[in-house]
Length: 150
Image (cartoon, rainbow, N blue to C red):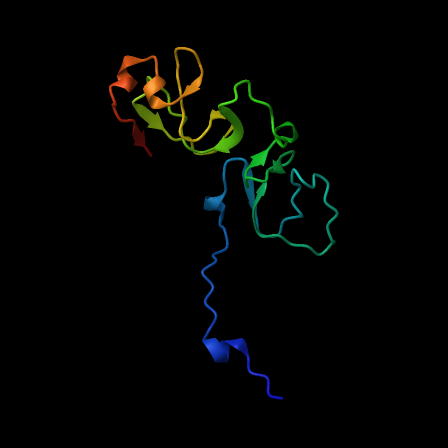
C-alpha cells in the first residue's frame, strides 16, 4: 500500500487564519503571546495542563468568556429575565433603534442587557418594544429612516 499525502492529491492546504494581534483585542481583553487556559461561563475554573500556551486575546482578570465570545462578569454569564416578552437578554454591538432616534452611534464593545427582539424598536414614550408602525412618536410613524454612524 502506498501512502500519498493529502497535499499531493488536492494541492497545498491554504490557511487563511491569522493570529490575533494586540490591536485586535477588545477593551476587556489583553493580548498574550503565551497565556493560560481561559475561564469561561461554562467552565469558570478550568484545570489546565502545565504546558498549555494560548496566544491571543484573553479576557482580563476576573472576567469570563461568555458563549457569545465576549468577556463578562460572572453575574452576566447566565440568561437574565427581561421585564417584557418582546425583549431578550443578549450582547449586541449594534444600537438599539428607538422611535425618536434618527442617528445611531455604534458602540465599540457589545452591550449586554435586555434589548428589543430583532424586528422591533424601543418606543421611548412607554419603554416598550414595538413594530415601527406602533410608535407613539410621529417622527417614526412618518417612515423616516435611521442613519448609522461608524
